[in-house]
Length: 159
Image 1 (tube, rainbow, N blue to C red):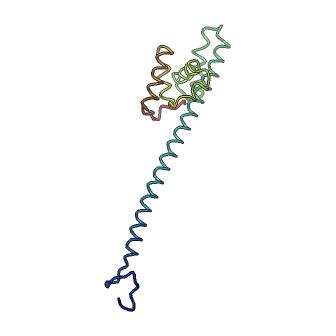
Image 2 (image 1 turned 90 degrees about the vertical axis):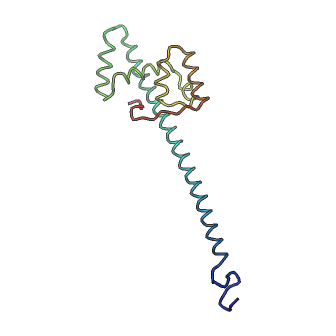
Image 3 (image 1 turned 120 degrees about the vertical axis):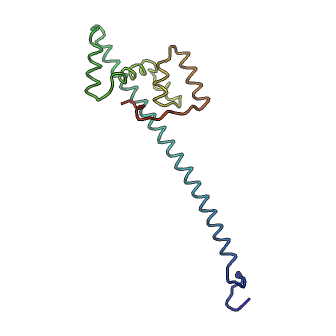
């Protein structure tokens, strides 16, 4: 060892401690990046779940309002279709979407029954079309048990 070399350096002047430190830094940085990636994905998932819950509650509340209004005037048989058509035009929605929301409210009238499932708005739009409560319950359970993908599309929102 020369007078200018530290105990950590070999004859070529490189530092083993420095090399280990660089490797350690890379490993730590890689580990940190992995943790950040996990945190980002978890955040995205929580955000998507929150969005789905808002879509579901919004669709149900709109369906409840529409259903209540139509029940109020149910004695006028010709009243429903033109009102729904006018509402759809005024709100910039498809009539079909308003009817789906109304059906959703009638099928799942209690908010608690919705919250117990981890389903998307699109799942519910499919489920409300099933013929019986037993069939709906069967598919809700299968969806939950098998973690079927929650469809995400631009047209799957209540509006």
